[in-house]
Image (tube, rainbow, N blue to C red):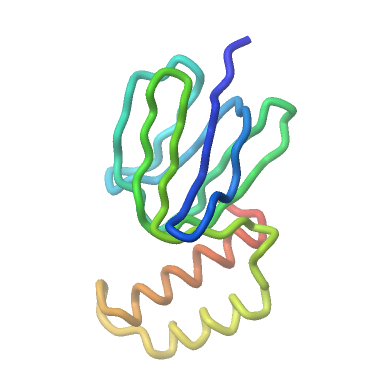
Length: 130
């Protein structure tokens, strides 16, 4: 059975590398699912959870804050501006950051609105969501 070779890195470090059945990422145009044999793709990533299903069925969640991903053959490279594994996210701290950002949020695209979206993504990933 074919599998994907996936590497997730950020500017700071390598986060995850391994074999996977599938990868789901969010682009400005919407979600894209990658399976073995997918056509080559190069796309931007938006603030969202990155979902990986490993070959043994384990679900890996990563909070991705911008960047891009590339698919070439069965190789998937995710290069994020910043990213965090679900297990690394402090839920209480993420909730506090979300409350603070929402209280200060301005119009869409403002720094406060972006901070709220980042906090929502972190909390969603930490809680095992989509």
